[in-house]
Amino acid sequence: MIILSIPYLNNDYVIQKAKEYQNYWKEFRLDYSKNFQSFPQEIIDKKTILTIRSVKEGGKHKTDIADKIEFYNKIISIKNCVCDLEINEVDNLEITSIPGNNLILSYHDFSENINFTKLNKVVRKSNSISSRFLKIAVNVSKYSDLIKLSKIISESNKPVIFAGMGKLGKISRILFRHLGADATFIGLPNNRTAQGQLIPEEAELFKLRLISPKTQIGGIIGGEQVEHSLGIKYYNDLFTKEKLNAVYIPFVTDDIDDLWNWINKADINFYGFSITMPLKKKVGAKKQLSAVNLFLPKTDEMLNTDLIAFQRSIEILKIKKDESILIIGSGATAEIALKAFQAYDNVTISSRNKIAGKKLADENKKQFTQLQLLGNYKFDLIINCTPIGVKNEDLLKSLNLKLPKRVMELPYKKKNTLLINRCIENNIEYIDGKNFWILQAKLQQKKFISEICNLGGII
Image (cartoon, rainbow, N blue to C red; front, side):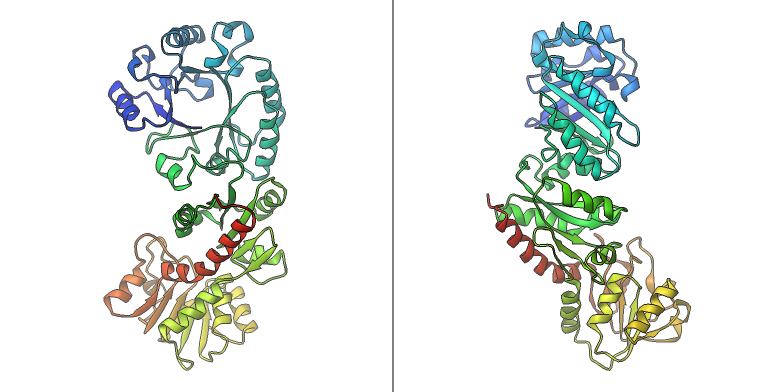
């Protein structure tokens, strides 16, 4: 069940949104108004949740609990809707007047880390009170939290509405069914009522309505930039077209061991993961490999499809063996670029990290040049293996570089980088980040589909 949470800003706003999102269960946050009694009752039905959140648990305006319960009972008697009460603010005597089938008991904890001992007590208390749902809203900061949450949710004797917040709020909401929950909340653009809410467009992107505990999970692992990966829409559309019960999700992490432990221990079918900056080397090191960008958990296979993309790029741009080549960067992608150009003699590497860049050049028997000296040379091909350009930086100007004959610009974003615009303006041949992604994605796509089918993921 997907519940759209709508703030009660004014009557016109909630009436408009109720009409616009007719097919959703809807929660109306009445605490956004000082005068919740004026809420338009004509838009309330059996799929409506009324919430007057207390200030202590994130509400906007203070309301007496007796007035809240009296209002709830009045509306329930007329509309047979569902109402939300915080489990920490009521006892059994106060809520006996609210029919259990119309009641959500909710628990909110905005602490950075989850108090699992306290959460266990909340579930036990909820089990002793008649209600339709238990709502759990907590900050999720570690992937290992998801395993503990799944266990606690399984101990509830009633359906759970799970609302993850914090660093992994969105991921936990996408995976609410894999955690054992029956529902989650989404919000409206610019008017979310809680941190971590997906908006309807994101819910559609991740096929949130269709995800079940049997849906196979995969995605892209890396830094914050993975939330804008081209693969998210590409693979989710592909899986829908091919009628595969799978979803492709961005897994943001700065702690690969935490994520890795969750992947190994969670009771979830993982079909595969793309790996990107800055984790290609760290993931590869787990199997004594230099760098990888594809991991298939079931077969424990690790590959690097970037090498194939570089080889195809060389063919497309028709790079000759005697041309001068500059590789900017010292990470895993630069290392793969050096492998692709191993047979080329006139290759220079340069990077901000002089130690790592010099080491990479020495290991591959190539020349290293400091960034500040690059302006003294002109290159036939420049390969940018860094994030420079994503935030509209001018690579050529910042490094005092002259325009080359060809470019491989690996960073990508919705609009062209300044370097790609320069290429277009000067009729310079190029492979941009989107082209490069497509070249390396072909093998990943083949591997993902094979794994999903082998795991029984055909709808």
